Length: 222
Image (tube, rainbow, N blue to C red; front, side, top):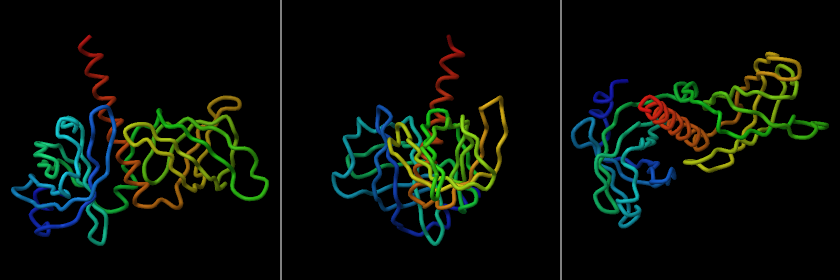
């Protein structure tokens, strides 16, 4: 959807959730009121003194704004100004609308730590997985444990900065490919993904894409 078209039909003031990027790779979540001033420009009003000192806010990182009006919409934004501790002025660059689009937005997962356990009696010990890519819909991972198609797994996903959380999800195996003896590529679909967990996964994906882009630029300039 076109950003300006979406924002032109935005309610006058609407509650939103905001992932505010902090210098050093941290992300802090806040509630705010969004006011469209001149599309694609938006002002976010927070409770008095809710935000950290403006100097701590990373204006170079993406700021994700989550809008829920019957469906969840994510605004991918940049921070133009941190005006005190209760106002951010942002520019929206992209709108991700509808759950199916959130589900299929995929990012690199090499820094994730994955732990899987077969569900049900006799599921056995947990086994580790190495992430390849992830979305709100599922994850592609490499494992040293053979699993079966349609097998159900309980997963722990340890997400590093800026999210810094351990997420839990149930999943079902969709595809298995043997890469070499005893080593498998496994694609799973999440079966109980809630909106908050999806928000965390998307925040990680955007942060990873930005981090990898910075590394590419640094490597190119060497």
